[in-house]
Image (cartoon, rainbow, N blue to C red):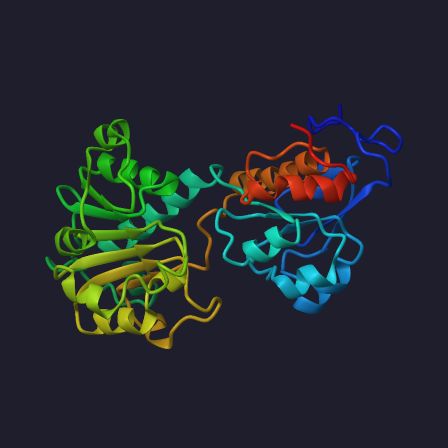
Length: 355
């Protein structure tokens, strides 16, 4: 066994005949992921915490069997076609909207992601954004730093209590549930909307109630977005939805920026439909609408929901484990397209999967 707990696959003892596999780790991570993956695979690193350019990614991926990617890496059919040896891509993120999964599946490429390990950390940031907006923390910090605090007054930086307020969660998945737990601790009530009702055990534990989207928009004092980005959820929150929200509502988004129509968001904030917003994601990152940058009632973060040392390392190793498992002939638990496994296995081994 190697130091990271995986069975070593040195030349000649691999379960599959052939040369050692080669993997590209497109960016540096919170620990030494190259050392973590060796000696099972010959791993190389992009060498920087910044994402590779498109051309760099294409060049360095040459002759690689695997890629540990990040959300800035666009994995489309063009890239897949240019690298016929590529067999598995492990995306260091829960979301995989940067990956053309149907194209990968068609070419026999297995896709993995990193669910579960970042739930609490992302919910921590989401709730931090909520508290910062509700209690005007960033605005107050700026007020003090700029020397504007001259005396105490009874109306100085008045914010909003969360106790007794209603949190509407769009997408009660793993992160949504963690957000609900933090809200409950502050005395908030929980309603949620998604396509499928949560189990009775989950609803009872969170005292959460499934409601239609329109009811969630009308009744929530805070709306927190936790659904994945898809064709159906792109611009899910737009002009019509903002018009239904109660005055003084706060919007929190730690999911994907394109779920919210940004021009409609700006208008809702300018017109006072929204009391404020806490945003960790944007439609065209790293670009942020100029209007949002000027608003004191908007707290902005640079897509850092999972950005703790511990969580980022857990994400990186989970992605690496997916690669090592797949190249070792075992379907990873974090496979996004497990239906591709027979095709993948035949590409990997030259044999038809039995059973």
